[in-house]
Image 1 (tube, rainbow, N blue to C red):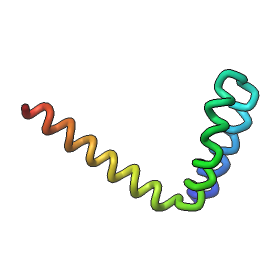
Image 2: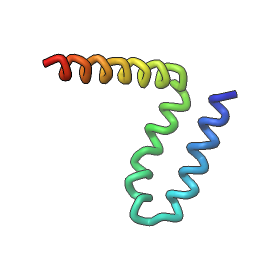
Image 3: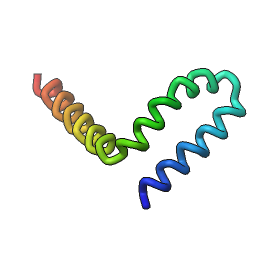
Image 4: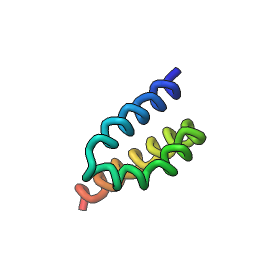
Amino acid sequence: TSKDSYISTITLLQKALSSTPNLHNHFHQSVMLKSLMSRTYTSTIRLCAALDNLLMTLSRSCKLK
């Protein structure tokens, strides 16, 4: 499923970043967020879509001004 591939992508990112010391500290802060996101995967996708729509609307209204 897409959720499984999402989680495996996160795991791959975790492995890659753990071997990169300067990024590791920043990524370590995201571990809690990662577990939250995997639990609320569909909600996160919906939220991202909503934010994307909001940003599109905002950029359109800025261009009109």
